[in-house]
Length: 253
Image: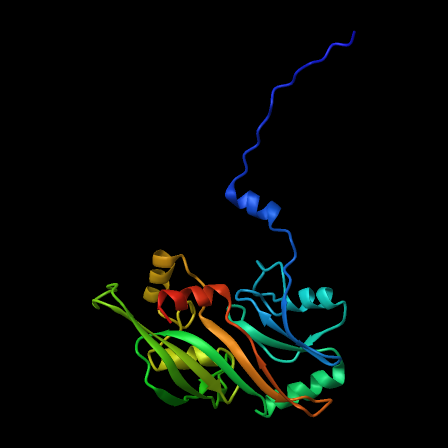
């Protein structure tokens, strides 16, 4: 007759940080907005880098590699989108298409529209003509126009103000300078919520403490351009992501 030994049960408790690290290994699937034989466009999530960067050493996933693995084809981005900005990001499958689209961006032939939530009651519309200075000191012309779509006033005191006011704006940059919209809205004193570099620290801290929200509320919503191969007019739209929508719900928009 065989004897058996009953071993005591062992429970292992994981910290939240370790648990997330172990169980968040599932590869992100990108939302494809448009695809044909020559180009592909995705709705980039906020916080995702376009490609590897020596500056952001904390990043483990990149839109370029994720999309390449997802469609099993070589892809090349034809324009920039900040890490914290969500929305439309366009890629080319072939080198000649990449060059042609890049040239359209350089020539200002591609129309871009963005949605942003900013501090304060923005004017109904405004054109911003404010040159920006590069890191090397070179001055670049920069133009942005915007219209205000919605406004909200929350019964929450902030600083010396008894209420908090915000606006949803649609911005159209006619030049494509680095951080252009972020710098332009900060320049006219309507900073984009969640912009830690150019925005309002008080507002960013308020959103984090009040709603646990750290997303920069800037979304690349539309791209209008001529297809470099078929010569068709292409009009792409991307829906806002969940965190952006959550703030819109808070504002009752």
